[in-house]
Length: 389
Image 1 (tube, rainbow, N blue to C red):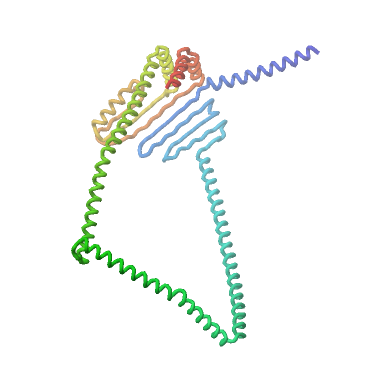
Image 2 (tube, rainbow, N blue to C red):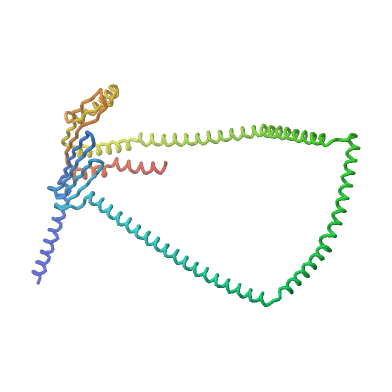
């Protein structure tokens, strides 16, 4: 029994060890097997780019091309096409077309529904009009029958009697009394006007004509207009000092705001200077730059060939640009063949680069940087610096 239990435990341990070994080997393969990349670019009439990236004997293979303003990406895993941007875009276009067709069908259905509703309304209106016409005809026939039965001479006599009574009452109430009242009012007004005229003549000592009174009114109006203009001008002059005071206050407030902004900027600048002058922070920044430089040296292409002909159309500017490119000669060296053209504006050439990226080396660089004391102290100081700002 004990032997059997030991045998089962042994089998379980072997299975667990084999699973762990497989997992560890997969992790090591991912970390140690490099990702190889290759890129080719050409510029003549149009820009053309081709790029490849593969891992573990093309088990994962990525290819991209850029030509005639089209960017295509294809990804293959274990030799099977996993992703194709061209087909993906085509699928998107098909989906959009189907959606447009569906929307068109829905709109057509709505239009048909509207048309059917209009037809139904027109039919209902026709039915209503026909009913109304029938009802009007029936009412007219009934009225004709009633009028035919009544004696027309009797109707005319009754209408004349009603007219006479209405006219007599109107004369008594609305014509005689108001006329008398109106006459009395007119007499009173004429008497008042005469008295007023006599008083004005006695005051002035002269009898004014209508033309003299008209001139007097004109002069009064002109004087009023002049006084109004003078008044408006004086009001504007009195408003000038208020406007000047408001402008001065605005300038004062803007100067205060500008002063506060400048003081805040200077305070922040002094804090940044103090942060950068700290020796621990300096060492941490140096270590980060070293690690970035190591990553860049690892990623950069092992093979590089550049063949370029360039020219701006101006000999002076082409010479200046050539001097700027000469600064980087220590980096690209003999791999680049640059030909300046001092006569015409041109930019043509080809570029080819090839390299590899190993994840294990990148992981080691990052782990070293994370476990560095100075770098960790730099992160702590930076967080405190952010809170201060």
